[in-house]
Image (cartoon, rainbow, N blue to C red; front, side, top):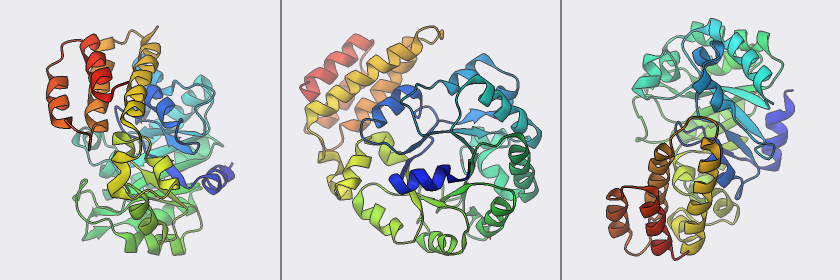
Amino acid sequence: MSDFFKTNLLKNDLVAAPLAGYSHLPYRRILRKFFDGIIYSEMISVEGLARRNKETMEYLDRIETDSPLVFQIFGGKPENYGEAVRVAENECQVDAFDVNMGCPVKKVIKAGGGCSLLGDLGRIQAIVSNIRKSTDKPFSIKIRIGLDQKHLVYKEILNIAENEGVNALIVHGRTKSDMFGGTVRLDILKEIAETAKIPIIGNGGVAGFDTYKEMKETGVTGIMLGRSMMKAPWVFKAIKEKVSDKDLYNFLPSSEIGNLLIEMWGYMLEHTHGRGMKETHYMHVLRKFAVWFCKGQDMAAEFRTNLYKTNGIDEVLDLIRQFYKC
């Protein structure tokens, strides 16, 4: 059980972050083209799982090749976590779980999850204790270092994690108040890595080999990529080939990027079948990826403007083929 993180991080120390609305099965299939390491699912509500809500259960969709995979769960009530993990295990093959204790988004905090837990260590302990009593599966917790620089709680949470049987700790080196700006505290990541008895996965600001190397020097076991992998799924391959941050968007030929988008649309269509999901939902998601992927390309600004004017998927796909020459 406890070797899941150690074993997989030894094979590949890069980790794909949970990104709400984006770390779904279709995008994970694209990530797997560049990456054989641990991928985290988008956030799944423990309340929804405990109630077996139909839409929530669809977040558990996976295919055989989508491995190793960690299902990330979130919520405010400790008593719901035990039932949530049991439901998930009954529904599908589970490699591991994770609890989101680091999301600073208002919607998640309002639900009692994410960063709201950083101000309630008793609730953190109750959550991890309930999970450990309810499953033999390995699980991690994902935190930020504190609510702000004056209220850092990473030491206390590491202590809880190690005492309650948590198998790995993911630490975003910023505080809740930093959101996605501010300095990533590499000094704190180094401190945690030096004292921890469980694998530590660092997170925050890695967007190429330069920033990967800086975080790796802290001694963390693994490094989780978030926004950079959302905007350039090939970042994992680029880092392994020691491509600098500034060259990330020139790493793949334009036509290959276009083909990735077309392939992703095929996966999205496949994912809608039998689920009552509307193609228009994934069309908007595809359009976002097309906007992000074009960074650094000639005429990118004009392409983005034209994309935002499209009214249907055929127009989106035509623009992608024209722009990326695929």
